[in-house]
View 1 (cartoon, rainbow over the protein chains, first blue to last red):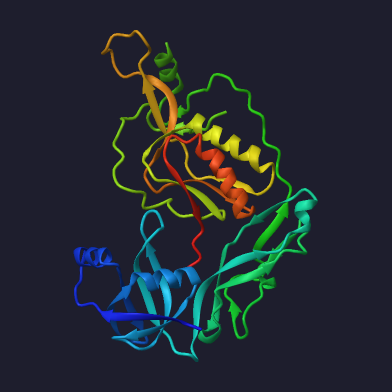
View 2 (tube, rainbow over the protein chains, first blue to last red):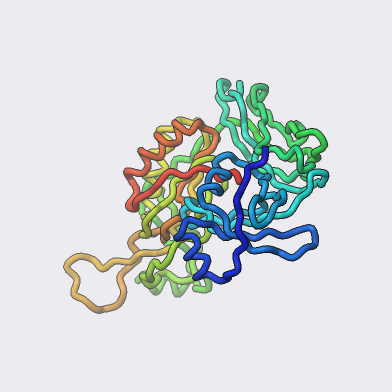
Length: 207
Length: 138
């Protein structure tokens, strides 16, 4: 079920107004798409935080605007604690959209017991998906991943009607042995080479 | 051996000021969990290496550790009992300039509990305050 967000139309623009809105506990946002004019919105910070916690991508807007929207982008502060701005795209139920979905690894790989390390190479993939079946994340089972094995994008469990927009041979996760690190003798650390300086000059400076 | 550049344009650099927060390198990109600086400062190459060793010893070949910063900045110093003047000192060590928000290390392929324990050990060695960070899904 889509998360419900109460929205108000925001008539004020600019950094200062946006900062003031955030101090009051709101989140500025914008709604666009379907060839109509964009609308600046004011959302509740608590509701946005809840939406993020639930991992919802599809939301039901309520209040000044009543339509379904897809969360296209979230802007975070430096520390990734607060949402600064939210981009919403108008969508209809029968529409197909392109989005990036997170891949979550499930289970324990037998390759780890064989002495390998799981290397999650690709964390997100782009898919084309009907709006009604947008997944929060794609769960990929690694219980058959043995040492020196890999799982490619075509093994991803997609929702009905969805299709991958990446190469099917794209490696998502691998299991391999860790390369032994070279032991470097701790000696006098040499100075790096200075670009553009000739060897003769370097010799002079050392003297 | 501690990290340092292979080639540089200049042997010495001015001190500079650390202003503002990190606007890049402030998200978990490679692994699943990260260690984020909440303070600014210089991170010595030797400290970075100490952190790496502490993390690797805890992980014991499980998961993967990523170092997200590199010591690009040469730090000079004047020898003891030397009179002031006579020019800038010689490069002593290399440091990474850390702005608040910079992700220093990342870990992938381990459960959250292990990552927290590992970063707790590593955090003791850091000269700046740090916090645990997870990858953003939305």
